[in-house]
View (cartoon, rainbow, N blue to C red):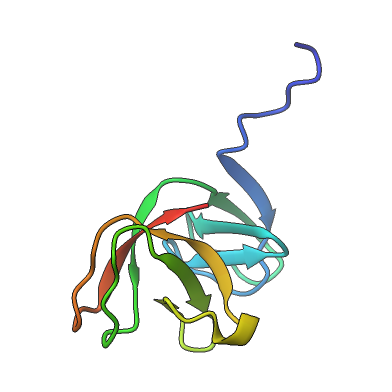
Length: 108
């Protein structure tokens, strides 16, 4: 097919802020995980799918399949959309206990 460009599993975009490898990156409606460190405005490759172990609000318990949001201020995942202020980044790929500092998140 002559119009195929890529699988879309990874994209290289301008970093919306300084990021480290493994950080959550949100650019408009795109949500991904940084594959490497990048300064704000520099090219960063992000992975748009998969399951990642990410920091979470320690005092939350997650159930399998729960909607997961990104709290950009505290740089943690949460089940609280904060009245729409936190962007949904995916779903819990496994239950996570209260307390625990990380959880498994399936992007998408």
